Amino acid sequence: QVQLVESGGGLVQTGGSLRLSCAASGRTWSTNTMGWFRQAPGKEREFVSTITRSGSPTYYADSVKGRFTISRDNARNTLYLQMNGLKPEDTAVYYCAAKIYSGEVTIPQRYNYWGQGTQVTVSS
Image 1 (cartoon, one colour):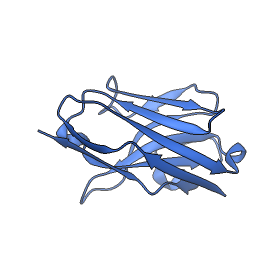
Image 2 (image 1 turned 60 degrees about the vertical axis):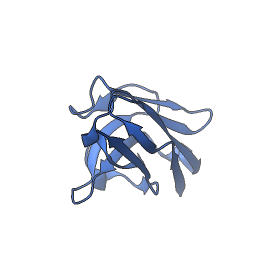
Image 3 (image 1 turned 135 degrees about the vertical axis):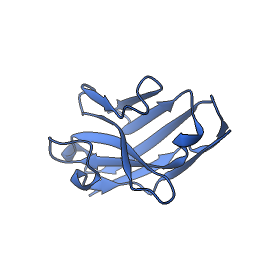
Image 4 (image 1 turned 90 degrees about the vertical axis):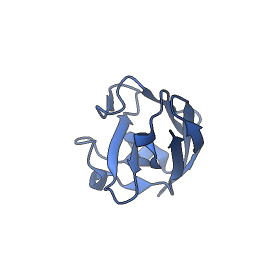
């Protein structure tokens, strides 16, 4: 099993920045791709960004491209999401996820492990 714990969420004004972290423990060697998803109230969970174990390639949703940067520190088993230029529509619970197998990375159902989520709220 793999345990994922997110941190770094909070309340920020439009245009502000936040850095999310996801600490992984357990059988982390069994996972390949890690990613971030988000879910706003009344909406489905949506893909934000992913990164492979080697750090490349990375993928981003069009809505965050150019504003968010995903990275990972394998030595510390930690995944990051640097979020700049935040907008009210970025408000959501952000989840860290990890998947064992390669392949499709934007579908939540393809991920094997999930964190509990961290709330990000962007005020206008």
